[in-house]
Amino acid sequence: MSVRPVTSTSAAIPTLEGAGVKLHRAFGFQNPDMLDPFLLFDDFRNDRPEDFMRGFPWHPHRGIETITYVLNGTVEHGDSLGNTGTLGAGDVQWMTAGSGILHQEMPKGNQRGQMHGFQLWANLPGAMKMTTPRYQDVEGKDIPEIIDDDGTRVKVIVGEFWGKTGPVDGIAAEPQYLDITVPAGLRKSFKIDTYRRAFAYVFDGAGTFADAAPPAGVLLEKEVMGQEVNIRDLSGDRTLVQFGTGDEVTVQAGDEGIRFLLISGAPIQEPVAWHGPIVMNTQEELHQAFADLRNNRFIRPA
Image (cartoon, rainbow, N blue to C red; front, side, top):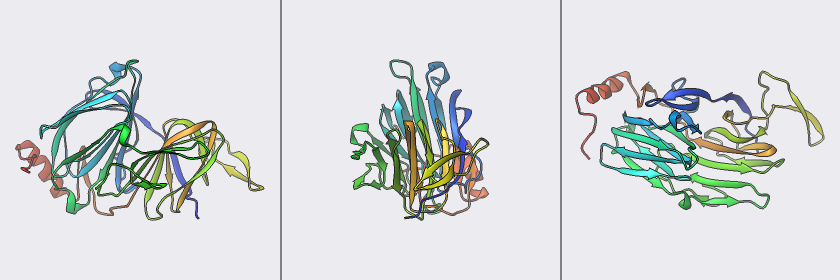
């Protein structure tokens, strides 16, 4: 086994989106090759309804897939095809925008006014960008959770892991999307296909990922297998961790344990022409998409 080295860590950046939703963006609208096939990742966590209740009114998507994972509160959604629904705590929605869809997402807090969820954008290969839009809505009770003997918990949202298969399937990027909790003080490794791009997003507790380089801070010293080695200071809340190549990721949980998403996917390795919620392969395709939007030709007949 070869442990994937950490190539970088960064804090999610406060961002304003939609009609004034305050969220934190881990990555997006920068280098589309950075985590190919993934384009954007947002953490929409808030304890103040006034910071999220205006939501994400009607907006278009073409050429991508989005996955929304809700931890607290609810998200009411609707689209130009007449689909409507509500995502509750623990629920997941994967939307294939394909040839084009207009939709809206309106978050609501729980009884304490809290809202927490994530949205990930995955690219579609050129041959699938104009496919028919579709949804997969999955209730939290249908997402398998594995509890290891040492107390490690893994929710398998997409892909296969430890003998379980997530309920969301047919995704072009063939991702693996795991919600992992490692108890305090435990060192744990998780296998990942060598050919996939991978990242972790820490959103609760703290921990140290193996082979990390130091941030702008002081190195810690830790004894591992009889040798003194330098490791990174703890990665904590809202930290993006990017990995190099290898076939497993190793984490050392801190004193309060750690919870993070571990996401990987097969690179598409195609040109990207991207503006806002529309992602195509060429500038000509991008211009055509916006022309379709202006001329009411964006929604294609099924």
